[in-house]
Length: 418
Image 1 (cartoon, rainbow, N blue to C red):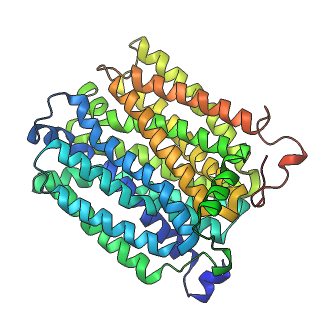
Image 2 (spheres, rainbow, N blue to C red):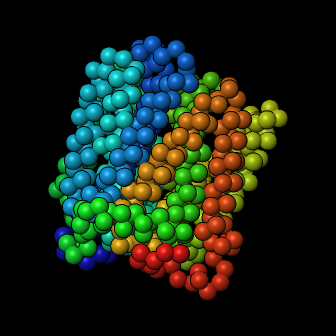
Image 3 (cartoon, rainbow, N blue to C red):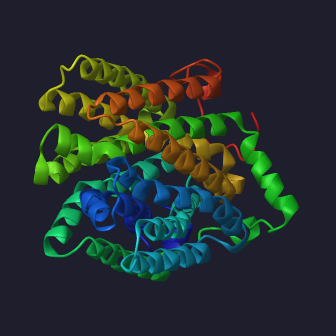
């Protein structure tokens, strides 16, 4: 366990739980909304059903763009202050959304809410990178993802319960209160992980140098691109999940159960990754996962195109895909951050921006292609998986599974450009 955590009397499980709680605010802001989309669309006169997806996209755009500013700020002022300010903005936007008079205003508030949440993503990854490196970092990130993935298990169900007890505005009140509790926990218990001697000046030269270090590291940049593609496929599914489960397969109120089961598989996947990564390494696990992810996505696309996809078969194949997503996502995030410990805040902000905005745009494109069948969503996964594999091959000079001397160590490479 980190000496800093020991000195502050914080156990590693509590540190992981705090980091996961910060990241979970984002998952909650997305997944708890899903059952409410039809009601929000009806209340705010949204005529095109696919336009309801913009409630998700608007949040992701605000969340992604704001990260570019949070990174350099957190490298200068530390991790904790930007985190708390961001959570306050998140809370204010959530409560204000209750009073939104029209759909346009709601989307603006969702952008602001996402911008406030940007600090949670940047600080979460930066704090882990401040305290851990190599496979130890990958193990902590996997455990964080495991707790983080518990949110999609319960979020749609919570949303459904809130809708049974009140109007759709109740969901925003719930999000605001949850953020308040999480923010207080972080304020009183999360230590400042960035040592004073490692803080970077907030000057144009320093910021430019930090971005240059990030953008000239081929391995880090390519793994961030790979993560962007797989998250694009995931966002494409999230925006159409309610339509697939309810409109196509007729699950009705059981939609949250199916969604929760899939998220549960991803949580199990992340836990198993934390057990295997110290022995097998980040590259072997993520490369294997992406091969299976892409192959099974191709199978799903073919079955959907042939109209041979009853619910049980869809759910089985999709479960394998999402299980592999759990292995791929946490390891590729760790691999993108691993070489950049000296500029962890800037790196996290750049990659967060690329993955969030890029993933949201790609996911929105996939979502807008929804045509009453599973084909666009399945094809989105297949195409995104193929692009992710290409990015990985570029990062690894055409080699997979870490073959050769260059892959024996997965320790820190601070600021090294490849």
